[in-house]
Image (cartoon, rainbow, N blue to C red; front, top):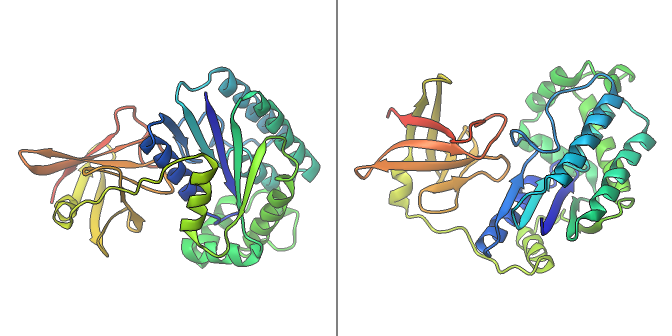
Length: 312
């Protein structure tokens, strides 16, 4: 593999969005590119299963890195988010593992990555981590988001070992994650670009990334409103017994309620923060189905995509 790029950062720092931006720009500049989100199905490094014994997690995690580096991608570029920092930190912090052990895992991975000729870590952070995390919580659903996290992880040692065990305890967890990540980024042995992005000047950060990799900026293609309207409707997958609703709001297509689709081409759209590409298929000038491609834990696990047939 010619380039291996990791995108990391504190919660809510825009890791997924910037990873997708980089992958799109590499492709539009003529490179072949593999993009791996944390939710990508059959991810080469990140795995969804949980281990009660943190040593088993570490062994499996390190073994996956070894296999990944041996079976290198044939693509020109691989962009991967949340693989070096977020995945091990979140899992091991939930187990309340000694922070020095967590640090050693990340440092070991970074040393393994030194064998890749062009390997770079892009790290996003915000000086006021508390404000950044609070903003992330607001965007993701406030109390409902914290309650969901609480119900999912309240059994973990991190919370059992502390007096605060309600939904608000996850704010403390996010803050410690941010503090650990901000500290550990100084310890890795691969080339690192650190970007403070609290001003939310996204065009500036995108230009920094373009300059870093000597890329020419290509915007998303324009798709006429009449075409977008033709894609709206309800699509159904019989095997999943699930309706996919495509809506037009503020001149943009949305799926899954609040997920904004962005154009890759006239009939293909992507999501910033998930491994989802929606392909609208026409027959006799009528849109009759949408196929979700890219493999994702929640949206599509099939090589040929997941097809939804239009029902209205």
